[in-house]
Amino acid sequence: SYYESDAALDGTQYPAPEIPDLATLNQQASATNSFPIEFTDPCVAPDRFFYGSNQWAVTDRLGTNKRAIFANDMHLGLRVPATWYQVVIQHDMPPGSDQTIRLVGASLPGVPGIVVGSNGSIAWGFTNSYIDTADLIRCRKSVDDQNRYHTDGEELEFEIFREAIDYPGGSEMVEYRWTCWGPVLTEIDEEVMALKWIGHDPQAFDFNLWQLATATDVWEAVHIGQRSGMPHQNLMVVDSNGNIAWTLTGRIPHREGPAPQLPIAAEFETAGWTDYLPPEQYPLIDNPPSGRLWTANNRVVGQEWMERLGNGGFDEGFRASRIRERLFEKESFSEQDMLTIQLDDRATYLDFWQSLFQEAIAADNDSVSINCQEYIHDWNGRASVDSVGYQILTVFRRQIIQRLSIELLVSLKINTDERIPAGENLFRQVLTERPESWLPKKYAGWSDLLVDAAKASEQELTSSGKKLEQARWGRSNQSQIQHPLAASLGPLGNWLNMPTVELPGDKMVPRAQGPSFGASQRMVVSPGAEQDGIYHQPGGPSGHPLSPFYRAGFDNWADGTPSPLLPGPPRYRLQINPVDPPE
Image (cartoon, rainbow, N blue to C red; front, side):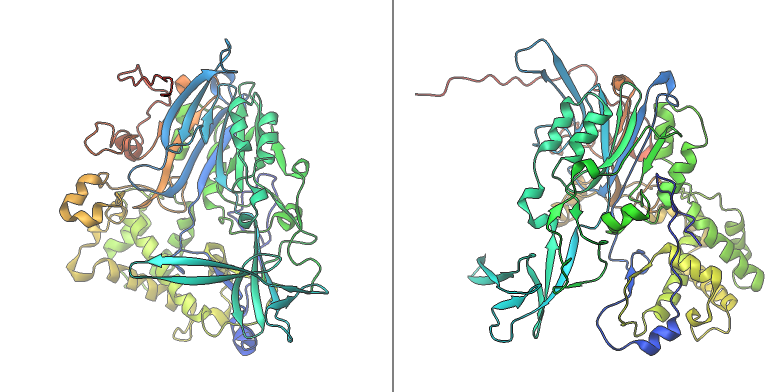
């Protein structure tokens, strides 16, 4: 079987792993501290949320006016001031020449360049790739000398670093021990766990990415991206000639075998990589026959590449599959069409849970009120602010997952070669195949579990005398985009925050939006036609709350009204004149 949410660019499908038999696992549980289930679902691990991003592109065959068009919205935690700074940079290339370059897009405040945007010849942007760039190495200390450790065939001495940590009223000296792979994370008796991570290698980072400012086509741009030392991203590029391309940025570990999912014994020759993959061997997809590209933190390429890249926490693909679906609905796209996809709140992932709720109603018609049944039957499929059905289904989904997780968490500490991702797809498998070992012992059958979860969902939403019709999704999903100092100012702190508004969208739809996370920017642009571009961000460029630009753009971001990528006529001008330094 395959995951229905899979939306890889190369068309490959990822086989769903077999559902673990919990009865067998519980019987075997004893030997190690290796936990086989990796919780990735916010309902199971509510303290974790994987921020993501969306991007897609179409070639000139599909773009209006025979232009390639690119869309990018990067999802981050939202705050005040905003993460990005919308900017236009114009300068001579080279300085003093008649050739002028204009960069349009989003920069980080204080950074001399743009991170995403267009230079007139190309437009580019990013999503997190979630490839695996960290290995855990398990080694043992020397019996004769506790300051030494075993590697493959030899003993080495720990490297010791000491650092003074000052705090009010005192100071403390902290000691860090490093191995040939990286820092020691844990020491339990004679066993040491070390981390081999690309972030510890200064050679893995540089400023090559800024060369995108002068790139003239997609192939020059991907060449730059593949040689850029930076966090690992999906780089998507379109150019003014109508071409589109996708590749990866950042150094990719060159391992002898597949990327490991569990700690590696130091005695293995393949423990920790020793070099990086040559850029010319990076994956590249350009001008696909469909004329379409998309990524949304999902798995992008197939098994052979998966073994090289590893899985650093790919999104399960529901956002990506919905974006792909929208891209194949039409044969022509304008900038407004791209924004419409960015604002899409169709929650296809909840269709499955709606059918389960309807099954519960059929099994026990009295399990929930007629009012609740109508909201479920009439749900429009969207995470819209007025939707009561969406709110009921999100609670119902959580109620079921919590019940299954109790069974899942019992004594599961066994030695296994793979981690089983406990996310949406695993629970769908369980609820489709319904293995007996997964049914919590308190229930006589699966229908009983569904009915109990349905009852609990309505009870939760109507507790303390609340009416079900008040359980609109927008009441739960209200913006809380706050200044870091606001909490310390009491009621006056609201003066520093962005307005509180009800937001459509949710984590697993293209319009990924929650109270304090979501699209930190939205950009739609065709290089060379920036005048038709669209740009959103949840707050203005000024950090001064009295400035008219402090909240500029927030309303358009919140309600989805198109706003231009290019600025209008200048209203203010700041001129800085260099002077000779004093002698």
